[in-house]
View 1: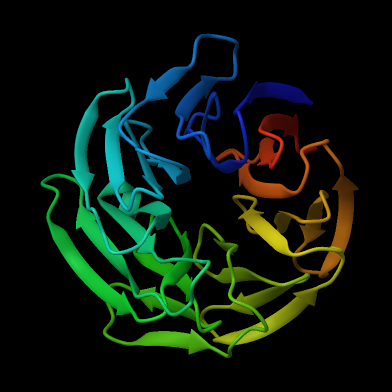
View 2: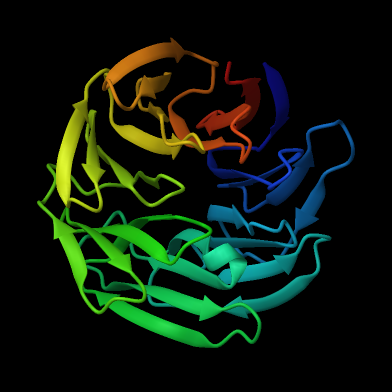
Length: 292
């Protein structure tokens, strides 16, 4: 296990660079960093005024995006140069993701503390910054999941609903309402599976069949972070019980559990090659470890 670095407060998001040698992080302290896991200097990305809530690295590694409580999304080049900004919106930008091999950037906008506040899901084309879709969510968009090389995305909202949209199709599918509004979503890289944190349990759906295929029980606190391994055969989760659990998806069983002394776990990521996992939590500490 490697301790990568620290934020001075809760770490909201981590995301691996495509080569697995870089790890982006963002936190309540308003800082966005790209850490060199080989021990080199980190790169800082500036522009947000307030807590940064989400971060994503493009599939090619040439760009980094983040959104925050300042109701803006910023897009930087990998060397730290600010390329463009979107917003301000009517609510915080709580999740960002790249789509279609990095051609598009999508953001979930909503207030997780007030389900009565309006939000939306916006998508922009990277090459010219043009907005190509804007989907309103009267109760806010609370989380986002996407297949980075495809045009499939999912989001949750303040009415406990989870929606899946294949962007080349007109219709969008809504799964049955959860017990609570999901703040953790993950989609397998082939867009076959979708996982959502539903309080202490994890709901697992088959997207093509549009049905729930498993309920994963094991956490003793709210599930706050989810990430699939690249092959979709394992799912990693973390939450309020301070544990990180690895699940065998097909069998629906817990494979192993760890406590990395992070406090409540707030974010997770699996490297694109599937070899590494990163996690962080309320204490500001970021750790990376070998999955096998």
